[in-house]
Image 1 (cartoon, helix red, strand yellow):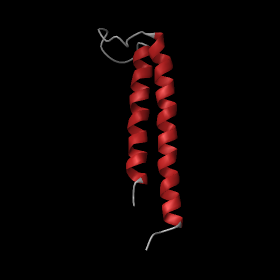
Image 2 (cartoon, one colour):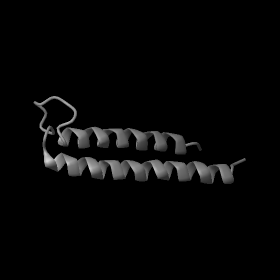
Image 3 (cartoon, one colour):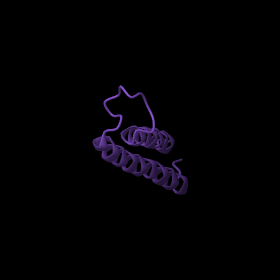
Image 4 (cartoon, one colour):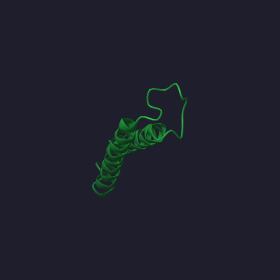
Length: 73
């Protein structure tokens, strides 16, 4: 089963969302009317979301590597 690629893709999307949230919290991106804009809590939330995305991405890569070393017949 080739589930490693979709998991890695989800990880990349989560990382991108985390970066956007982080930048909105820093007042660098987004509309000023957003509740995340210039909000220090969203700087922290964005960092945690980025870390979570990296973990998901690495898990997908590990699954791909394991599946390539032990192919199913």
